[in-house]
Length: 178
Image 1 (cartoon, rainbow, N blue to C red):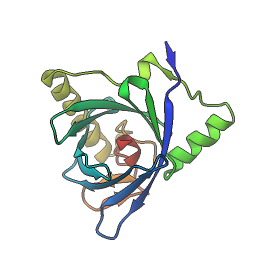
Image 2 (cartoon, rainbow, N blue to C red):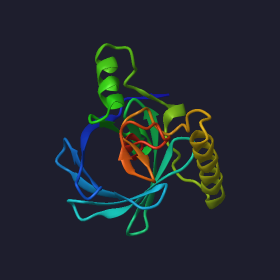
Image 3 (cartoon, rainbow, N blue to C red):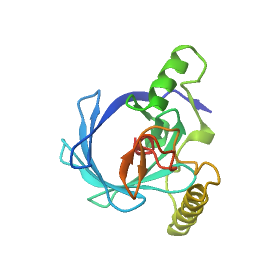
Image 4 (tube, helix red, strand yellow):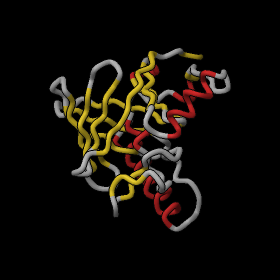
């Protein structure tokens, strides 16, 4: 199965207080702030708010303040799939996002989303916990110099010791929160 999702590009701006202002090309805006190692609290200009959490396997859990939960998957090059493959958020801020756009324009990166790239529709608490453990192990391996944590493609990574850091490939990228 191949799906051609609706693309929604966005750009991030790092603010002086360490938070991020995300502007989507469809007019939506989000204000985002890191809370701990794997959580980002956000609110948007349409009255919604919640928390994004990076799980293992490049899965992002979005919990809205009203209790709804949805999942996304970072598929690389600054692209994140949401809504069962209906929406593809494209980060135009990062090198990965710009590179993904360039390669896609050249026909070198398929803009279609395959079934293997779709985020899960739902996860049990046990499945979420297993993914959290995978993320912790990958982050520990990466911090000890042992490879990629599987969370980013080099754009705007988060380092819990010093905030947003675009030079570090700490395994957590703003691309993952599309």
